[in-house]
Image (cartoon, rainbow, N blue to C red; front, side):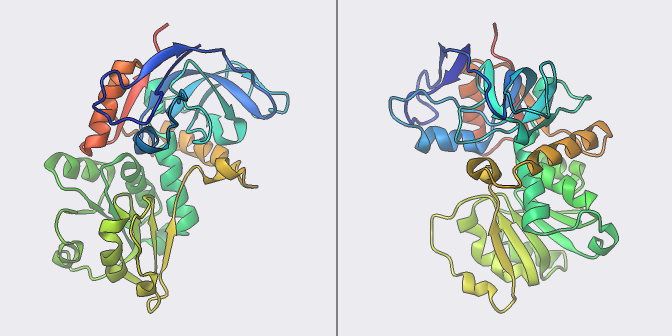
Length: 340
C-alpha cells in the first residue's frame, strides 16, 4: 500500500517535507478493522507530532481524521463488515490515516453520514469528538436540558477553528447562549453563520470585550486556543461554580487556587484518551460519532469543511500544513484518497 509520512521531526518549510513509500498492507486482527481510506483531513495534532514527537529515522504516518470503506475485519469484530462506509479519528499512538489502508479499533469508528462524500465526512470526526467530550463529559452540560440551559452562557475562545466550529453548533443544540471569539471579518462571519449569538475579538482584552456586551461572568468557558495566554483572564470571567475546559497544553505554571473562591473547575479534554488507554467506556466514541452522523444527515449539524486540497500527495499535504500552522485556516482542510 502507499503511505505518506516523514522520517524525522521537521519544520513546515523543509523541502520535500513528506515522502511517499510502498509498505505491506496490514492484517486486521482482534477488534481491528482494515479501512480503505477514501478521504482525510488535517488537524493541529498533525503538525505537533510532525515537529516534536516523530522519531528520527522512523517513518511516521500522520493523519487522524478519515472516512473510507471497511476492507476486512478482525475475528472479534461485531460492529462492522466488509463494504461498510465508516468515519473515525483514530488513535494517536498508532499509524495515521495518510495511507491507502489503515487499521483502527472498531470501538472508535461509526457509519459515516450518508449525505456526505468521503472527503467531506473526513472533516468532522476529530473535532466533533473533541467538542462533544469537552461540552458534555468535561463541562457536564446536559444537552437535553435546553430549557434550563437557555439562561446560561458559554464563551468559546477560538470559535472559527475546527473544534470551535463544532462547539458552537453543539452549544446551540443544547440551548446555550454562545459568545464566540474571532478577530477577522471572515472568521466573524463564519462563527455567526454557525450560530454564535455574539462575537468578541480575542486580540483585545476579553474582560473588556465582555463588558461591552454587559456580561461580567460566563457559566462555561471552552478554550480551543492558547491556555497560557488565557488562563488568568478565564479565572476572572468564569462564574461562581462555573466550569472551564481547554484542549491546549500549558507550558507555564498557573495558579489554580485562583479558582478556589468560586468553586470553579478546570479540566483538559484530549480526544485520544479513550483509545490510548483503552478505557472501559472506549465505545462511547463509536456511539457519539453515530449520533452525530444522524444529526448531519438530518441537517442539524453543518459540515465544517471549507477547503479541499484534492488528492492526497506529499505536495498537497505540505501545502495544508503550511496553511494550518499559520493559524489562518477557517474550519477544516480535506483531501481525497492517495492517487492509485
